[in-house]
Image (cartoon, rainbow, N blue to C red; front, side, top):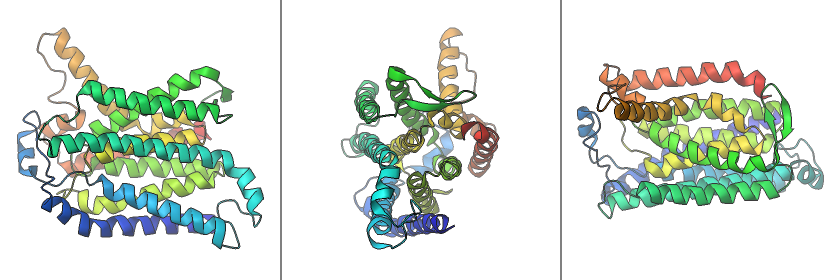
Amino acid sequence: MDKMIYVTVAAFVAFLLAMIAGRFVIPALHKLKFGQTILELGPSWHKNKQGTPTMGGVMFIGSLVVVLVLFTAVCEWLLPFKPLSGTDDLMHMLRLESGERMRLLAGLVMALCCGAIGFADDYIKIVKKRNLGLTSSQKMLLQLVVGVGYALVMFFMGHASVIHVPFIGMTDIGWWYLPLCVFFVIGFSNATNLTDGIDGLCGSVTVVATLLITVVSFALSAYANSLAAMTFVGAIAGFLVWNLHPAKVFMGDTGSLFIGGMLCALCFAIGRPFLLIPVGVMYIVETLSVMLQVSYFKLTHGKRLFKMSPIHHHFEMCGWSENKIVTVFCAVTAVVGLLCLPLMI
């Protein structure tokens, strides 16, 4: 119970910090003229969002890092009772969780690198006035470097290749761990980027997905991961105060790419990479909708499978409000995630 209270307090502090940050970051972004440019390819009514500040992902990224560092330091060095390990013996605690904590640290660095790629993309779009930002090949190369680097660090850290496979259990997949890791990092950072298309969508789905990851982490007694996950939830929730419809700030690629990396970090840290599939079901659906749309368009020489892709735009074109899309996507994430949780523990 003490651990749960401590983790909840950390989430609340991260929420407050991200929410308060909006009071200062949003005006600063306005002053710097870091406004979003709306592409002609999107729904016509999105034009009224032109000029809304972007790169707001720095709000929840900064809040997450500050609170995570602060609360980890407090629990390890200042409290007589160690909430993350349930022991008063610091050396015993470090032996218990050093592997998990190192994997989590490697994942956090990887997520920050993903966010840095997004920051570069946003910077080029806004400051350099190149509307498409980094080219697809440049972005893919950078993501590949980050993914490979993370996979190698995790693999040689020891025992990381032993992962949980649904219906089978803990399995050592050996060198196959490397391509699996790279695939998830690149795939999910791009998938969360595609999901960030309407007010509050990516952030809201991420809150639900990360809460499910927190449940699994607590069930596995992975308290360091639980702390990171709930702090992430709090930081995203604080950002959503400013990002829900009508959005006063967008997270930009800075935030969306970081989210994909952070979700991978949380699941790989506890040896549950396949947990990303049920909790990330809507990110996957968004990605598949784009792939299907492009393939169908090419095969039929100009016909479209959806009115617009990613699929959240299809529902917009069908008359759904942005709030309805966010609600439905979150509900689907929650239902699919909850149904699959028993397979992941």
